[in-house]
Amino acid sequence: MGAHILVVEDEVDLADLVAFNLREGGHGVAVAYNGANALAEVSRQKPDLVLLDVMLPDISGFEVCRRLRRSAETARIPVIMLTAKAEEVDRIVGFEVGADDYVIKPFSPRELTLRVEAILRRVGPQAQAEGPQVLSIGDLRIDVPAHRVEIHGEEITLTALEFRLLLDLASRAGRVQPRDALLERVWGYAPGVETRTVDTHIKRLREKLGPGSQYLETVRGVGYRVQKPA
Ligand code: CA
Image (cartoon, rainbow, N blue to C red; front, top):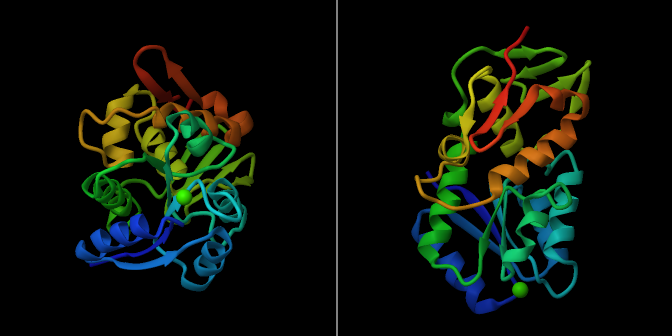
């Protein structure tokens, strides 16, 4: 079963190559060559995933991603950003932009396909976690089927990835989860993938949780842990 993917890239050759490979993988692909078209196509087509280049001729990919995150209708669509600059990674997956992941140019079509497949597996309907329907840790309440997180009864808007990360940690409350285990379960990556994405996502999750971040602990040199409910 293929997904519907929007590729946003102004370099026509690269956009065509990426689109070709995704179609070979059985996905439906649409291409937008600038930021304005990307935003229009996202609201029209509601894609399952967006591949978004940072450098676009009109609005930057950063701004496109921020706008997608701001609107309730598009906030949970997974976004993988394409960037030529490794130093942009913290901004991309950080609080400021809010993408799910990034791929650094130049990349092989196979590398990109693996990332796409991993994210699609994670957000697919079959990816729903088994277990309790509602988790409560202190004032933090996670309603699993509704994808809803509340602190003191106030809803917090999380991306699909942030939700899965929090749920993964909360459903193993009291036990430290190493970064590589989180990368495998939450991101769907094979062992050995090197990325700073876990730390930057935890940082952003903490900022969003506000007072609820007290339940999310860093265990130095090991990983992260959500406190056991008292
Ligand atoms: Ca570009």
